[in-house]
Image (cartoon, helix red, strand yellow):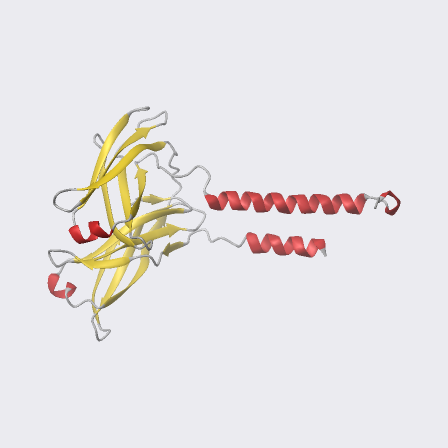
Length: 254
């Protein structure tokens, strides 16, 4: 019985993971900008076991009669997305005549490539803060440090902004100043959400940093910790089962 339970635990807590699996999270949202363009902002996540690059998200837009009127595509903000990492994206309908007809839309990942490039986990955010400017725009400022032993080039910060319900309401990204950081060098960044209505909706935000060589991601994601604890629990059960089977009936004490 114990053996059967152990096997069940292994297959329950360790499902088969696809080598490449990119999902669009359902916390995306849309808005019409002050100049009449239609924006869809959201997040994609690499739930596979291999890093992917140049992830493209395509939006298919429909009018009130559910007739397709336009398709638009855009790349995810992070050029390389390692396993268990999210990246913001934004798809925009720039044609104002078409934008005003949009009633609903669908999203799909339509392009990506597998990459073997490993980004070092050596970029850290030392501090950050946010404020609303007199013009009503959200500004996010902070400091980034290259904590590695080699140069970080084209260093870029991405912000994903959420409302109080966890919906993505705005995204923004920009290079640090300067973009190239020597080992142990610190630099600043300043991002601005240049839409007053969307800025007012922001309740919290997350920051990501990536360069050609490095990325900012947790050293021990929660999913890895859960897998480790489950594996440890399974090994303990197997060890106890082995010990019980090796004991003579005359050695068991009650």
